[in-house]
Length: 142
Image 1 (cartoon, rainbow, N blue to C red):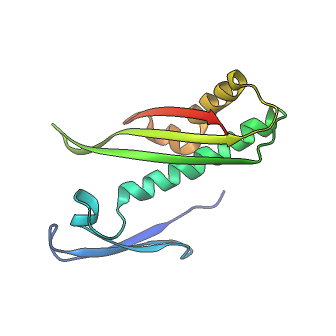
Image 2 (cartoon, helix red, strand yellow):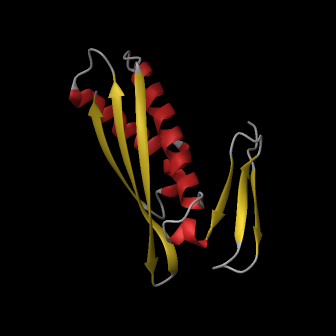
Image 3 (cartoon, rainbow, N blue to C red):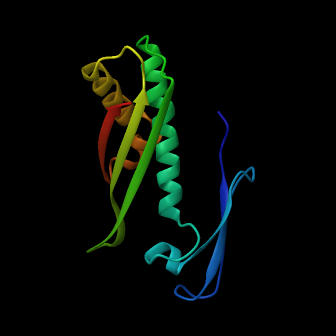
């Protein structure tokens, strides 16, 4: 399997410095700063990138699970909300809320929910993050 990489460069001190984050093959490059991470400043931040990775991974795993059950989706759209909170140990990702909508003609909600839960538990990014952060899931049919 391939090894994936990204890089980051930071200049200056924590509160007044700035940096750039770039994915390995250049599909994304963005600026980040203290304000974009801990306030509402322009740019991205590591937590948004974790959210993007989790939403993408979950959507693919859910699509596979649906197709494996004989219900190929028209689409799966997922949003991941990463909660960064101050704890006794310092700033910590404490929770990730996954919200997904699947357009899956002919599928009943009970089976949809079961497959969604399986995708949450088994996507590689969920498995990586679940020991340290609570992961919630809200799934609905379109």
